[in-house]
Length: 171
Image 1 (cartoon, rainbow, N blue to C red):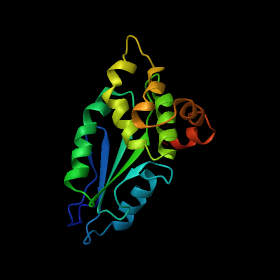
Image 2: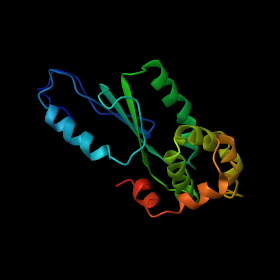
Image 3: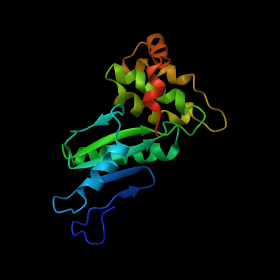
């Protein structure tokens, strides 16, 4: 956070507890502090969308099974569209729900094939089917592979590889 002496009015902001935007104005006296915060939030293994040099970075702490994350997803997509080239989205997994770790592993396997964003869209679109609190059906996640152009058997195997857990951790 900028000091009270700072005149840039750059602040860390949170929207619905889901995302944090970091912005550094050229006049900021504490640019080093903003950069240090960005380094703590943005990990080299995190899925990203938008240019790395964008003036705004949104770090979304995402749980694929979370209804609030699903609700904010179209808003984040609209921000990315409205500010194309000026905003970078970084996803950090926060798997709090019962089947979130599985979903995150499948997202990482989809990312290997360049299908992360399509798969995330599909998981959110179909979340009421697979992530019901009273009757979850995580096995449906594997069926969504064909919807995004992936081989289900290979996708399942890749989701279980040793690299996936490292990529989906948030801290």
